[in-house]
Length: 299
Ligand code: NCD
Image (cartoon, rainbow, N blue to C red; front, side):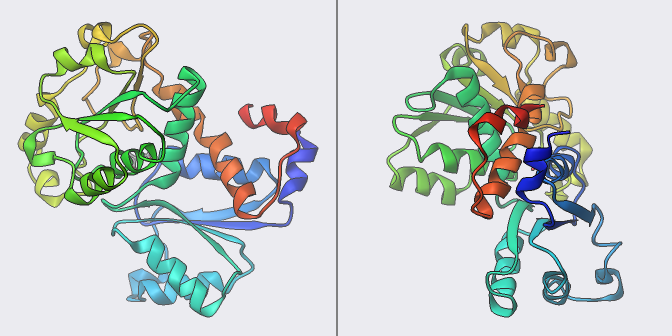
């Protein structure tokens, strides 16, 4: 199937090395690379299935992996800044040999998720400029919220509304970036009042796996989650043509009754991970996809 797409990166190899679990990102990177003819191998549990379990440092693991016959290193790590650190190691020992892709670095960033989020908005609403985007949930630990806010700041006239319990508020670094880039943002707390104003509602779970204080205290995590819950009644308040997004996994902050609501697009959003990551890989290797093949990205 798709012989032309499969020839674009044929012979290329990608390692997917994850220190944290993943469903969407892991499989969509695999699907994207596979669609373009790359070979992929990796692990979802690098803490156990790598020599880290024997005491090897992150630096050594990355240096060893980068020395293999590999062209892209997709990394998900528990620490913020890990992918950048890996890129510096690659630059030092194998400059220009391997592309390092950040697939989530602890409470830091998740740039490819932001790309697919913005792509989803663009496919649905046909623009990004001038939109009002309500971002809610665990803004403190949620790397997707951070990367999305960052990417939205590249467009003009976007207004961001943040909503979270105060304990999970967006950190200063992103707010400062928004200020510096002239992006309008504000914090609101009345969900029902704000829902009808938003073109995009982007909801997220409480990051119990990233924040030990929340992981060790399920009652607190549930209380913070339930502070802002979206059920059918809330989804009904959203305006015609607006979209309800979520990077997934959903862990109770949106009721399952909303899954088939006309506003909900989070499964479509997840599907968009494959074409966006395929496009990213092509971009990284400087290959242009022939226009007539581009629709196959969506199959
Ligand atoms: C997100 C992540 O890992 O940051 N998941 C994803 O990649 N779609 C969101 C989350 O785990 O809550």
